[in-house]
Image (cartoon, rainbow, N blue to C red):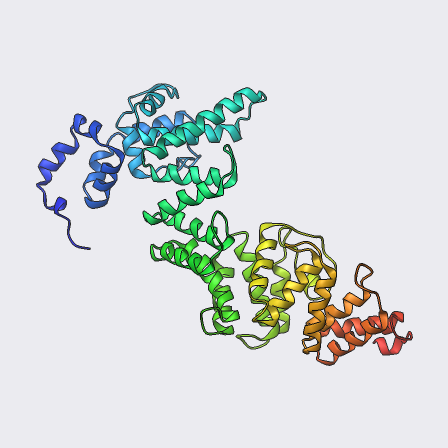
Length: 434
């Protein structure tokens, strides 16, 4: 980075200016951010009153046991507020309110977050009080956002997106995220990518989603990198605007499965890693490793483990965000890759991320079964056995279990033995079942 002119200034003169109370009081938030960014001497000079502010935060119970603030403030936020923090014996916040009323964006933002935290940690039994505190919190947040406080704008966008404390408005949230993303806020770039990926407040566009994820990743944002890797895994699997590559798909998903803590991305990536090992796509086939990985991906929010996906057991319907995302991605790749089409049919049969449609699932399984895919043959067999909207026919089920078993599918072999043992679609034959 080129040496900045401000670092060449006379250090004594710079110290005198920064330590002048009148000068400090006249600084706005953006000026302090610039000083912190361009001059390494600015922070220790400007933050001389920060310990006093931290002491007040301790008294106001805004800090964790380790001394860190429960409400995240940037260094420039802390400096801006601390410049006006006198020695206070109590946790009274009147000085902070006065500062916010004078137009201090950092103080308005901090008050908004304090009030939000109190709404959840100290719920009042009186609706009128909760309503008044909620209104006050939103007003402070809007005031800070209107003064170009970027983090306040981000939180305001979150409220519009979730419909929490304000009327839900995806379009307004999207506009705020886009403005922040264009100003370089990495967190906003990730969320903007999610908006494009899900079609929230804007037409769905996976390519633009990756573009914004990549911009965040270029700033060192891990969340952006993993969201980008997750989508690139699907694009590599189905050959969407890139060369089809099972190896690249597996590598992308393995990275997300290993590093991500996202409750939506991680289980799907782990599930797909399991399938790649189970089928030997992009790696040497290891059926047992694949089964274990698919089993490990199961959770209450993602109830699609070994039994529900490989062993054709009926599961509970799920409309969770992770279920919807898996179905949408499988649907995206259903015309390009048989595995996506197969998993889409599993979702339709199980009601996973989509309304239950047994007949539509059976039609897909039939096509894939005729193409020779043993896992689809297994599911097609189960469609014949299922006593729902799909016609029950034990003999046809036995026939397709046999076709699956002949290809070495262990679940098909087990079901074939089950049919012989109990005479399901075939005369009972105990020795043959073994």
